[in-house]
Image (cartoon, rainbow, N blue to C red; front, side, top):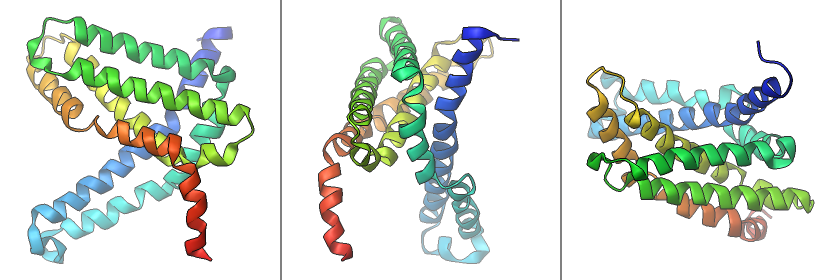
Length: 216
């Protein structure tokens, strides 16, 4: 059983990752179920295909755990400041090490995975520091304006990094090529979104505040 600093480390790790695990998987589940309707065309909206039911069932998942928006607030206001930001910084350092291993590997099938991971982790690191600074300055409204986008950025980055970790592993199961192919697809097709999310997090607070006029 872990004790002392080791116990604290793993407690903080589970606390940091919990809102991301709860939110990212459920959001992606809704996206996948919605795409299932699209794949069926007009028939996807008809009950006989079953696709519409999957979407209805999937849609409850982002709500069950206090809604994913609440998870984002928890992530930014309570989990990032753990150990005065030290834990999330050390975690990002671990992600960098995995990306570096991909970049230095001689597995050509990784394609552009290494550089895409570097970019996504850099986006994560920059937005993390920006949010931590806003919290220290007492500008919680600015931090919260980007909370949901940050949560997605974090989830996307972890997706790329951990798929890469799986691709690097030689499990002796004959599935390494498949794991690398999946990793490469995610890195080269999904991780470009992190740049746009970073921009929204860092520059979007003012526009969100001004949009209140539309609700008046």
